[in-house]
Image (cartoon, rainbow, N blue to C red; front, side):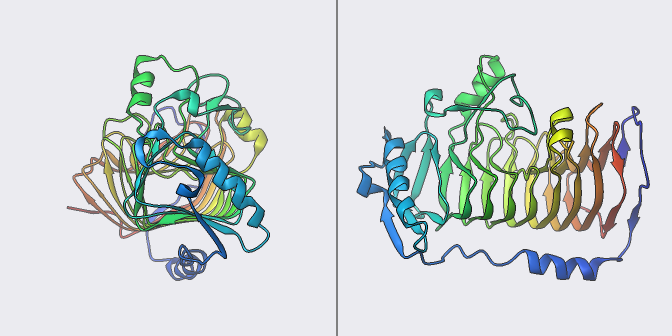
Length: 369
């Protein structure tokens, strides 16, 4: 374990190789990670082509997505609806989802993010952050966005959502951004979320960001971005509870999974922790981040994280728990089992300043090949 020298507070740390609690954990994980009902039949269904969309990779289809979802909203109290995206390359700017909706992508369907920043509206910063993560002020809204939703499914037959993030990475590296970069998918204040059976490519910033959400399942997804792409985290549960992530392959330029809960005084005041996070059967690698990270934005606290059957290869660090001076918060009850590492420099890294820990329990960690 590598700890920074600026350690200020370390309370009740337990790092052991033990089997204790494994049975209870298995029962809990099985009940929480229910099979995603990605093929649930909605009573109403339309194709994006019915609203004038053209899948040539050139025509901008933002209005078609917006109009289709506006139409389907009339069925939200009638069992919900499905928006089908057929084979093609569907260029679009940011659009909103609605409750009781399934967004379904055909196996040869690709949703492409526009390269025009005007197609990604600027919205207020998250209240638990108080400002954009990269710049003061607002932030660009994610390509696929939802707020205050219930029963939302984003799935398909392994279709693709491509953020075309290289233009955003260039703006970031040249320091010419006006606002914080957008995520690829962000769902906010939502419950009953399923994301499954899709490939996500080249996010401008974090890829999948459930924030202030509950009962979230992410299953059978592939997330890819170049290993040198900046801050392209895979899945970032943020001030969210009852999250299940399983059977995923992630290769990006930063953390594969980063569990967060707000930033500094804003996160402390907002006081919504991330808790009850299940991670199973995760495979992946990166160059600059970690397989699983807690923090560094964790001012609301993180607890009850259960991770097992992890395989990380040719990466810098497997597990990181990190914070920054004045950030506050806590990390409690982190359970990690059955980790295989191949060509990984550091198994566990803990960087602590004003951070309180209460329990870290590891079993079968690591097998280093």
